[in-house]
Image 1 (cartoon, rainbow, N blue to C red):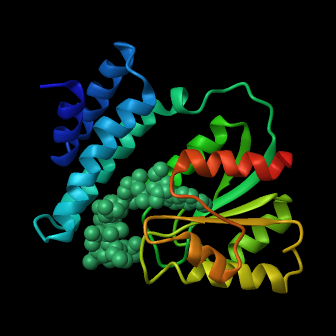
Image 2 (cartoon, rainbow, N blue to C red):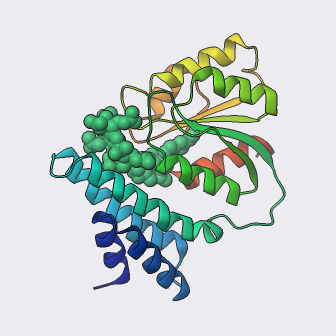
Length: 212
Ligand code: B1M
């Protein structure tokens, strides 16, 4: 069995300590962090996602798998986010109000930090007003919203509306993402950029901040 399969299977069983140890082993063997993430951790999470959809596993199993995922991602953080880069811009990020999914948001944060952006993490269940107040107080270049539920993605439209009302729309970009979000949804609500994955989100954010 490959180490990636072992990581995936242990993640599906929610064995956080085993996942952490296996990820550490894979990293020590010199396997690339991005590959450990996609072939091991995300592969396992995808299986859980499919089973969750078919009611073959339930919230408690998904929660322990998510905890194992976060432990594994924690090990990879230093490699995924190479340090020592000067801050190229400031971002505030959060999962929108009503939504508690934070694994994707945490990955986006990590990739952005790796690209030299300063990131303020507002956590989950973030009200539109909190995004706006933080962007103003902290002088952020970008507001990043993540949503995993079709019912919560609408909150992103509220963030755009509140940014317009606060008069900051000309100087703060709004980026959106998460599994149910699409390019056309981004356009429809008047946000600036949709990206489908964390690495592209980080690239787009750097491009906004550097004017590239
Ligand atoms: Co939830 N859940 N969940 N869940 N959960 C989904 C999202 C779901 C698709 C499962 C399913 O039915 N197949 C479904 C949503 C259906 C829908 O709305 N259409 C669902 C549901 C229904 C629910 C509950 C309502 C279940 C219930 O209670 N009956 C409930 C809601 C709670 C709430 O939020 N209020 C719920 C709860 C949970 C748990 C708490 C158990 C747990 C979350 C734990 C946590 O995050 N700490 C959980 C999980 C883990 C999932 C699945 C299985 C996995 C999500 C995940 O972390 N994926 C998910 C099924 C699935 O997606 N296959 C599911 C891995 C992660 C890396 O991907 O977040 O998509 P993702 O991030 C990607 C990209 O989307 C992108 O970058 C990342 C990768 O590079 N990205 C951005 C994300 N944000 C971005 C922002 C950007 C740019 C890119 O710019 C700003």
